[in-house]
Length: 244
Image 1: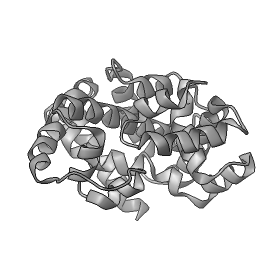
Image 2: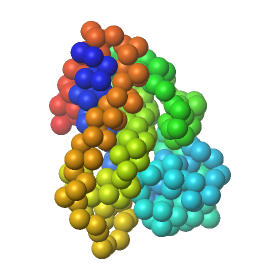
Image 3: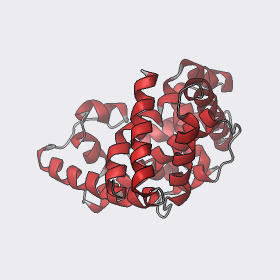
């Protein structure tokens, strides 16, 4: 497989598995222990890796979430706990989920090794969230934890690449969300209020942006080579099936 083919084949699985920990009930309980809402934990848990920045900066880095919705979560969390502390708690929950859910699965140690090679080789230019997360030390070095954290990093890398591609396509983040598979429901989930622009003219641009995303992410998988890249894709799909 070529690096772009590996990127295209792995992207949907990475986007799913890289965020799976956040849907775990135990992760949501961590938010309550910190004294913040689940939304505040999600926003600061992602953008908090940037440190104590303004809500506008967090919104610019997250990209696809409406700025007002980002500000609601960011400011609510900041009144209770420092953003970086929320990010650290989020990473700890990610590693906990990985150790418990991915650790027992066959092939997890190999998966963690391949994912980490891709993460190290990935280009971080113009991807502040990915760069910030890659610099954070892991609290757990078991294969399951490393796999979960690595998948989260690759998810941020793909998301950052897509944000760059969307802007290069002449689309706004809202337009990209509307032209995506979830349409207006996705826009609502990301905090964008109606009315919405028509999506018909946007679909072709979004498809172009998807292709550019694969091209931007491809250098991360060049380091693996064709055989290891194909193995990574196989392990990712097998892991998602094993998780049910």
